[in-house]
View 1 (tube, rainbow, N blue to C red):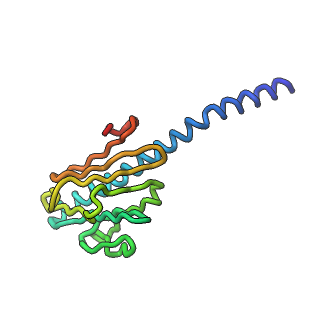
View 2: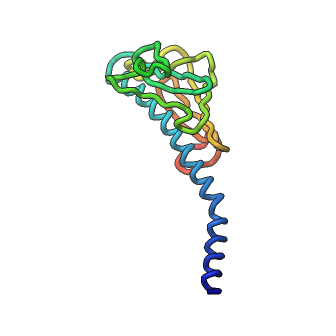
View 3: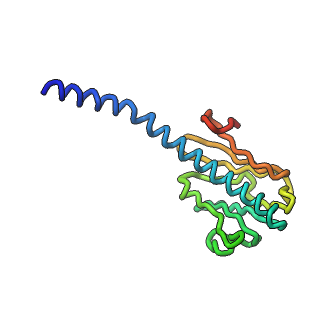
Length: 161
């Protein structure tokens, strides 16, 4: 009986020690997923513009329920997602689905328009800041249409900002 109690105590102690690292690991996975989802949407918008040979918009709706969506309609709104479609497929993501905060550094810039050449119409780089728990990172869309994601904290599998 003493041996069983000793084993149970030892297993409980080891489990308690591993719990904080498990929580951190889970936060890192969710942060990587948020960065990847936003990067994928921007890349999808660029690819759609090239394949459709028409302008495609990446809408950045930043308010209480942040949303990023891809659309051929310039008047896309995350509350009317039927307008946010490319080839009858809706490409959008809400920040609450990612359990993350998304902030557009240029608040007046409501969308990024990709040209049929894959470049960006109208202006300079656009940077979205993504935060989840204690982790922060950025997704930057350059004038040439290049989409880059990075993390402000060292994280395996993600470039450092």
